[in-house]
Length: 77
Image (cartoon, rainbow, N blue to C red):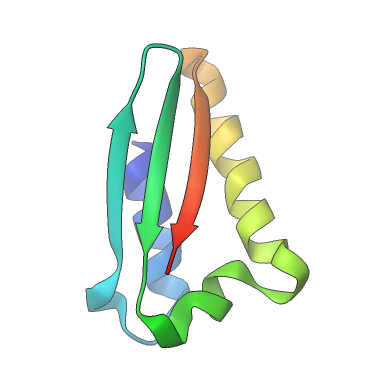
């Protein structure tokens, strides 16, 4: 569920949506989502002073609160 959410939002923001890739690493207490986008789109996903990345993390944590898991978003370049 969280993977689909991140993928949808990221594809809406970038110029090359076909290069958006979300890798999920499951743990017992937490889940790590690794987001990869085209090199030229990294700034669009992070936003000015990290505002878009922080907003994505807030939405993810709200979504994951239902399952009592911690979700961490990593933006890889």
